[in-house]
Image 1 (tube, rainbow, N blue to C red):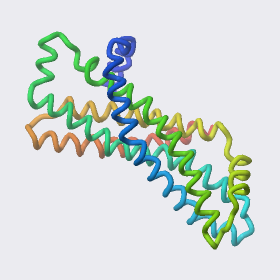
Image 2 (image 1 turned 180 degrees about the vertical axis):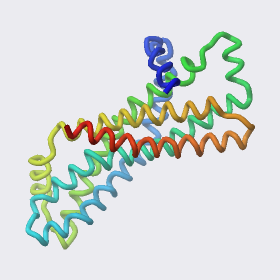
Image 3 (image 1 turned 120 degrees about the vertical axis):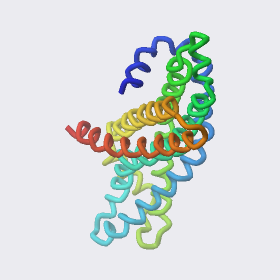
Length: 237
């Protein structure tokens, strides 16, 4: 919480570090986009496979698109992508900053009167806070397409694309997508702050770096799940 507060206070200085923010953004976004789309496609397909046939058997064929659309937009896309980014990007942040801490590069920054929060933490937190919501939008669209593909070509459902997306349009509202994107923004801040904090508090050499990476990923996932419940309760009011 202290690091989060110090990062908030440093936001007016973000323009000075815009080049580092841009570098971190492209590293997070470009490198993760293909993986996000592939994972989301199969998540949409799995949801359609699980919920489609029971709904069709009970004559709720027109509800399949809405169920898949809501499930992906409000829960699966933001949570799964946040966990993916925690494992891929959060671990890298913790390892990079942890290495700088162990090999006294952070002490060198302080000696040169450079604030580590401004130079290391702020650009990473800003970049992940912008990149993850954008990745979640791609995830939602790809997941919907994956669900529609499975619903159309699976012999137990055989739901045309037109029917699937018409039902999705009737049930899923823009606010549902906005809720998922807002959740992903909160999760991004959690992953960024937790990973940077673990890196800054690394001690003990290479073994300490490994412990920091593990803690960063595990703590991020735990907090993502906890805050998912809290945010869902808040957004349902």
